[in-house]
Length: 259
Length: 287
Image 1: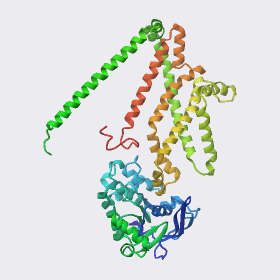
Image 2 (image 1 turned 90 degrees about the vertical axis):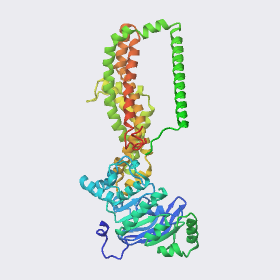
Image 3 (image 1 turned 45 degrees about the vertical axis):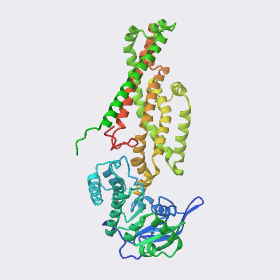
Image 4 (image 1 turned 180 degrees about the vertical axis):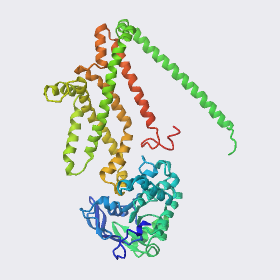
């Protein structure tokens, strides 16, 4: 996986580092003094109820939202600095959305080659070759000529993952990528994410899938009211949480049959 | 797969639907005939009908005036085609200008907004008169004296304002998540606009756009007030020559015939796969 090559070698600096990040929409404080570290090849899973700030955190890292305070560093470089070229930062980060957000007027192959061609300046033939590799990787090479609305939800999400991977990102952000899927389609996407972790990809994943968190996460962060309320290994946070809020959240999830 | 023969119940349902369809068809046919007959009767039994028929529906005059009116219509077609191309380009530029952000683009944004406000509010006939008689009055070098060009310019000015608003509605109808997805891949704002937003926006507004093009086709007849000999003007000339209004009816029929194919083309276009807004792909082939 190309993630190995672009990693700053031997540095103790985590690939992604959030310090004191704050974000409010009007009077609604969504992120409040959030610290998160994500080392290379690690998977950090964000859990917490809707509105706890998971999505906003991911959108801030991808500079789709501007932080109100605090610092976000990617590879030791402050990306919240307004002098930083946001497009260049985003080009190094892959993002996958809850609602897939494939481009409906483009065939699958064109969805995947768009960013390599426009952003990374890869010639068309080469971009297509690489896109086919990515589609192969997600098991959808035979759908390259299809339009997104000809695919199932799970297939669309796998294309979205291929699209995010095509730029060779250092970091992947996944925002509740299985929440819009029918239950029987969730597995194919989560399996793929597990494989990507084994390939050494660095990921920050917001999810409600506790089984996935337990199996794949290196660290689990429980967000509550815009703060990291509890963090640790999946074993610690999911099996023996210290804080009452975490316990309550996990109990509700268990009752909903998701654990 | 097992061979399927419809059950008695299903056969009964099919038979019932068939009977009902036949009955509905018969009712529709009968009522159409009745209403049409009543309308024709009301028209032809009116006291002035014999005179109206002579002065508006004279077949000999129609035959005599057709070549001149058709030739005039050819001018309408050319004006319409030329103007439509310019209008689409100018309107798209105006619509995109209104979406630009940042203080640098304020003048552009303000110009586009002001332009739309002015030309959407001003009656077309006033624009025609002002452009048609005002511009040449300036006696500037390079200003054309041709009624067709000046009339075309007035049409472009007015219609661009309308069509720009149609494009803008299309741009705004593309969900923000599409832009977020494009930006998350590292595309710049203008790249996202060009490759993701505009293609979807344009496809969505094709039906209202077509509506404006049909209106343009009709309004191209207004250049006759500047003296261009289009279908309307030709009909007017023929009318005075024969002292008979039939040429106007001829021109009207020709205009209608001209717009019908335009509609059918768009209908066919929007059924294609990958066409955003229609249920394309899966359903597209079956419909």
